[in-house]
Length: 200
Image (cartoon, rainbow, N blue to C red):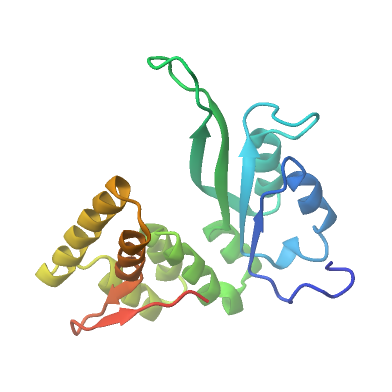
């Protein structure tokens, strides 16, 4: 698709879940797409679910060698009929992002705000602040105020968010999920106003 010009350029983020062929796709797009990408979300396997598929370690080594860092790993355990048995980790959704070292070495100042947005959308507030602190103090201060604030209004928002998350876990109907999503996409600024953040 990239060779035919069907993918938008530049592409900031890739999401891959192709039943074991993720590493092959990444290698095919290394020169045309991957070098300009800021983040990769990919399903990785810890045991062979498909014949000959690469495992997590191979995907992680490949992406690390191209300037990505593993930021999040959300594992999935296959079900078992044995109620007391521990479930083996089979596969996971992995998040790889460009990190501080890549940003400093490549001097990609034009990518900083887009990279920070990806960090923040995934809840990596501390890492986003650390990345911005050395490159854009104004952006770092905005992140500190918006996500590190402990004023009563911000604390109330956090408690409401936790309560809605519990409600959604117990009763995952559409109304509860929408309420949680709306609350999670709100940022409180230094002047106390709430700004809804709509997904791109």
